Image (tube, rainbow, N blue to C red):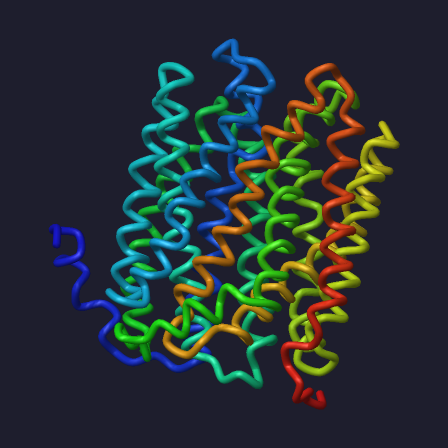
Length: 401
C-alpha cells in the first residue's frame, strides 16, 4: 500500500458504535454526492465550450455512468472479499485525482477520460459505504438506517448544484471540479475513521449469487434501471438544457431547480425511513414512483420558473419515497455474506439506466423536442411502479412506531 494509507493507518482502529457508523456513513455519502452534483448544472455548459453537440454532452454524462456500471459489481465483490475499508480509501483517492484532471481539461477527450475515472471512484465509494451501513445495522431498523443514509445523500445533492452554480459564476466552469477534488481528499480520512466492517463472506458459497438473480430481486433491478434513466437522463442531462435553452434561466437558477427536490427530501426522508419499518416497503415505493412519473412528464408543460419550482418540490416527495425504499428492499433480500455482491448487481442495473438514459433522452431532444425525452422517462417510472406492486412485501414482520 502507498504512503497515504500508511500515514492514516492509526485512524479507524477504535471500534465505533452503530450510531457513530451511521453518522460517518451519512457524512461520507453526503460529501460524495455534494462532489458528484457540484458540476451537474454546469457540466453540459462546460462541455459545450469545446464545440460539441448535445448528443456529445449526453455521451459525456453517460461515460461517467458506464464507468460506474463496470465497477459496481467489481466493487461489491471486492468489498466482500477484501473489505470495505480498502475500497472506500482507494475510491476516494481516485475521485480526487480524476477531479483535478477534469478541472485542467484542455479539450473534450481529456474531460471524457476524467469523467470515466470519476465514475469508477464514485461507484466504489457508494457501494462500499452502503455495505458498511447494512452490516452494522439490525434488520428491524434497516429502514431507519437507510433513511439516515438518504439524509446525507440528499443533503449533498441539495447543496452540490447550488454551490456548483455559484462557484462557476464567481470563478468559471472549471471551479466545481476543483472543489470536488478537495472533497475526495476529505473522503480518504472519513474512510479510515469508519474502519473495516464485519463480513460473513464464504468464498465457497455459490447459492448467494444464484438467489440474487431470481424474482423478486430481478424486479428491483428494473426499477433501479428506470430510476437512473430518470436521474441521469431527464434530470441531469435534459433538464439543464431545457431550462437554459427553452425557459432561458441562468446557471444559478438551474442549479436551484435541480436542488429543490433534494431540499424537500431532507425534510421528509427520516420520516420515510420510519414508514418503511412500520408500513412496509412496497407501498411506499409504489407511491413514490407514481408521483415521480407524473412530475417528470409535467416539467415539459411549463416555462414558468415558479411552476417548475412547485413541480420540483412535489417531485422531491416522490423521489424520496422511491429512493429510500429500493435499497432497503435490496438489503432485505441480500444473502448473508453477499451484501456487496447484491448491492453491486443492483447498482449495476441502475447505472445501466444511467448509461442508456442520457444518450437516449438527449438524442430525442436533438431537434428541440424536449417533451418526448421527459415522456419516455415518465413512462418507464410508471412501468416500474406496476412491477413494484407485483413484487410483494420484502419485510413481512412490520414494526409499530
